[in-house]
Amino acid sequence: MGSKPVIDVLNLSKRYADFQLQINNLKINEGSIVGLVGENGSGKSTFLNLLLNQIKSEIGNVKIFGLDYVKDENQIKLNLGVILEQNYFPNSFSVQQIEKMLQKIYSRWDKKLYHNLIDEFDLPTNKPISNFSRGMLVKLNFAATLSHHPRLLIADEATSGLDPIIRKEILSLLKEYVSDNQMTVLLSSHILSDLEQVADYFVFIKNGNILLKGGRSELLNHYTIKTEITSLPLKNIKYKLCQDNLVQYLVDVSQERVGYKDYASLEEILLFLVKGVRMDEGTSL
Ligand SMILES: Nc1ncnc2c1ncn2[C@@H]1O[C@H](COP(=O)(O)OP(=O)(O)OP(=O)(O)O)[C@@H](O)[C@H]1O
Image 1 (cartoon, rainbow, N blue to C red):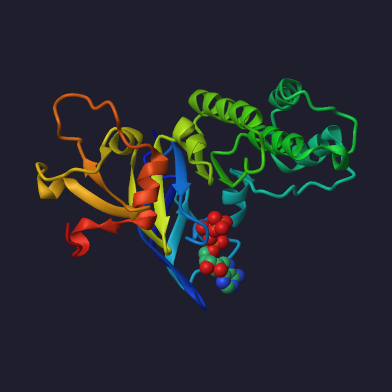
Image 2: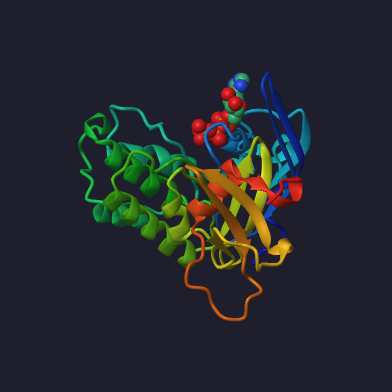
């Protein structure tokens, strides 16, 4: 593990007419896969764009690899891999021409890895990528990005619109790559089951603020959902959700000595966070 966090955010604030992002403190250490979770409009892309220096904050401080964009933008960018929803290579280029372009930019370009990934993904090497399907383009983006060995990979909705088989293929490759290399990944996705499959750490955003963050075992083996809570200590009842004439509670069962059978999934936790009411915010049972 490196001594400095790969991402270090302090008092970051960005204001739009109807929206404010405020991230007070977030540190992400080397070698982890972090899932960024939040409903539409919660601020995920705004946050990622601030991390990528695509937009500027009013106040606050972002350090990537302990470096500052003002002084060390080039060094940060050479060690950063970015995968967004759209394709950013010229449409007329082939897999081979893309390699020629990227190997001039990145000193750590790994020809062998690129060709292995292209083979593994079964992509044609001579055809212009304008002929590629969405799934093929995403695979190409992953192959091209991993092959310059970024220390940090930021992916914003990179696998959205893909079928489950391709998503699984890409995510297992990513997990394997991260465990073999010292890379950190920040992944935003609406498909929470995907994040549940790969992420070691989760950050939940709501209305521009971090509502909850925590490691996999902390979150996924922590809560259960109950409808009957009269016998439970009040401090363990975290959220209340009223939906379809049903009242449910998200209950912290992490202190129970025996393992639980029905832990809440990431998707269920998110539903309580987004649509439910926090029990220490003054709601009554
Ligand atoms: N350039 C902009 N000008 C004004 N408002 C903006 C701008 N970009 C984003 N916003 C607003 O900021 C809020 C957060 O948007 P953002 O795209 O970060 O959310 P998100 O969590 O990535 O959403 P989604 O999951 O739908 O992609 C929204 O209310 C959006 O309208």
